[in-house]
Image 1 (cartoon, one colour):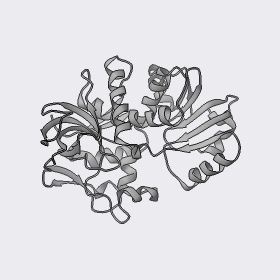
Image 2 (cartoon, helix red, strand yellow):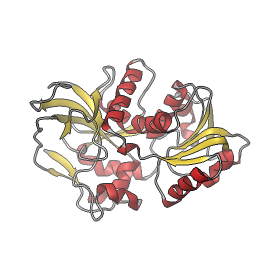
Image 3 (tube, one colour):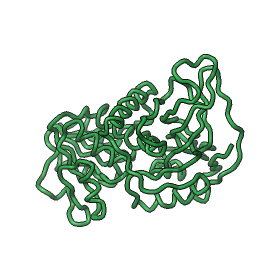
Image 4 (cartoon, helix red, strand yellow):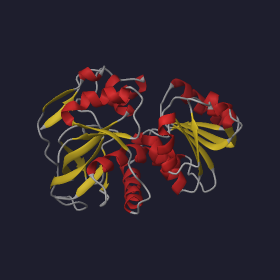
Length: 324
């Protein structure tokens, strides 16, 4: 089978599409023919090995041979002990904290982070949910348990995580402020944001507005800059691990009412992630959740997809089409 292989950390040039052995499912596993996956900032981080903390999951000296963790596709075969799924089922999910989804096939345990794909969307849209929406759920539902009438500011509201975070926060009844560039204002408004701030025209940290939650979905701000924009007992969330945020998490846990939080959503249990996927499937089938797709690339152009993501200008998701 074809797979994207990297033997060292570095630029997109380290990625190569090559032939590797097709996996065989164990008794409790399912073999999935992958139809779509995605490339996002986390994939760039694991390709580069930066920040260094990602190497504790991907390898200290070199990355896992096959990158990528989110997927959508069709079950081609099942192990003899599998009861939850059947051959021919459409499924979507994630292999995180492991990888291997940037390939034509993958084997995953039947009790892994998987669910039946929403019936009203294609595989590219489903793969996007496994990336941005699953991460957003880990923060908004598990970490802060966002409540009706709370106020939330989402920095990076036009990105993969941000576009889903806007929709989910609005669904949970929050007052949503999105921060994005001029070209993405209409997009963020269409997703349900009550207010949109154009970061090219205004710095939200200098405006006279306080929030219950500030969710930095792109890791381009900091707790230090945002703390004065938080209400008492407010929480600052970031998707990017750094020594600074880890120190601030410990400091704010001991002192003051405001909190700084980083959550490694990929490390949540398969049971938790599978439950979130089933909830996200329900919202999608009810028309409450939509994937925003910026660009699509075939598997053999995945290096180009990484180069585009590395520009930092994508909106929504970049989908990799693996099969039909």
